[in-house]
Amino acid sequence: MDDDEAVTRALAGDLGAYEVLVTRYSTIAHRTASLLGAGDEAEDVVQEAFVKAFRHLRSFRRDASFRPWFLRIVANVTHDLTRSRGRRSDLAVRLGREPYEPDGPDDPESAAMGADGRSRLYEAVRRLPDGEREAVVCRYFLQLSEAETAEVLGVRLGTVKSRTFRALRRLREEVGREHLG
Image 1 (cartoon, rainbow, N blue to C red):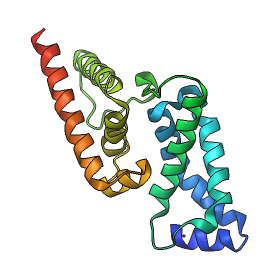
Image 2 (image 1 turned 45 degrees about the horizontal axis):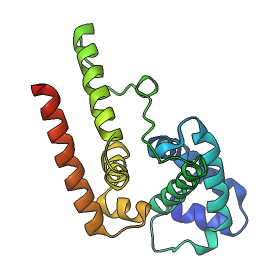
Image 3 (image 1 turned 60 degrees about the vertical axis):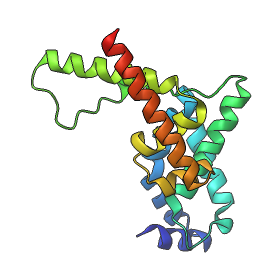
């Protein structure tokens, strides 16, 4: 069942169809909430986002894609959470929880060097200004298109492009400085 059919059936009262959407988007919703600052409260954010999405399903534009619409809800709930904590949203990447090595190194030394490089990159991303960090998280960690990123963040496409450009420039400067220093 594709997203459109699941939404149609959920609007008609089929809770099983909505469960299909929950199953399909739970993982990326958790990742989004964590990367945007929910940290240990990501599970609560995701549950609240699914409840809000269900309550507002009638307002979902049927000609749009469900994924970015839902991830925007996740992002908004995460922002509400981080604001209520009384501190700025930060990137809560837990390197130990997300071991991702598509071509995994063959030896422990390479693995350690790769982990160190990822750790430095994540730290540099954490230090980016909020808007730039959010654009990088959506584009590269969540692998959303520029249009989807714009929809999730509630900004214009040009804003996504400029934030991404500035963030990548800052990250290149930071990585260069670490290698030279």
